[in-house]
Image (cartoon, rainbow, N blue to C red; front, side, top):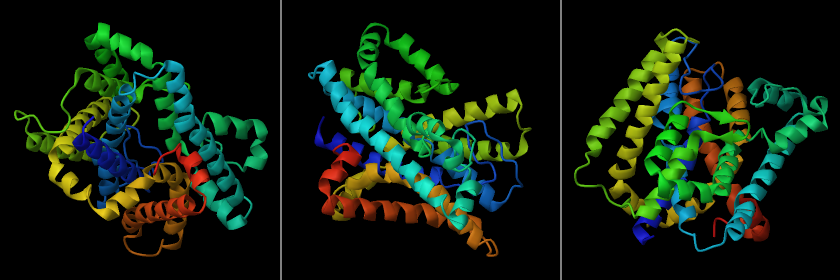
Length: 368
């Protein structure tokens, strides 16, 4: 992998993770946004803006991260399978377990005080839908959340990536033998989301694309001359806007509505990936060499791991104390994720400088 592609990967990794805070920072009454989600509140500038960004314009990030992950993992075929998995346990599963535990302990600590306990209950981000205090849920419930349904729900990405790494020899083999069939199959899994317990298929197609790109030497650094990023950008924004309007107008909980919104959502993501990946090279070339960017981009993983559940709790608190202010929801949406990113970078830098060994364990050796 040459330097230009390495820089591109670093840029998009950091930007994608920062934008994740704005995907998770929305304060719509609809607490979970799926591709087919409708909005069960009145259309306003705030609700339209937040849905457009949180469930539209910023949704290209995770597919890009899976492509990058697949490409990078495929670079190291010279390592034995056992050696690769041991390394992934260190870089993925140990951080997964540690950050899941940290999120549980942080939430438990907040539950010990009346005011903050009310914030936790009001936020309601428990993946099991049971937002009782952990002292009432019991050890079995807490253990299950630690391993399988973290309160830091963004950790699903790490679990999915680890599973893809486990089955990598099969993915590589099937891409060599029947790439079109495999990519078609995994594309359908992504297009119409399929999940089996802890196995999430949302990223399998893009991880496979990353592996194939590395094996076939597909040129990712520069835009092919025949490709017009302008057309893809127009389609990306246009479809996202149309889909957002439809989310307010279509009848909720109807198969036809869900199918229509899902199709538009997926097409918009594909257009957005192409437009962003190939369309902002001048920005990347300028930014990647700036000292400030090199400093803060070290903490990409720290931002990823720390932002939830801190972000939902801070957002709920901020909305409560600004409820009487004009435009408080849109203001909180714009500022609170930025604050959380800044806090994450500051905490990460403090730990990196004061206890570097702990920082290394928490990040799986990243950030140096």
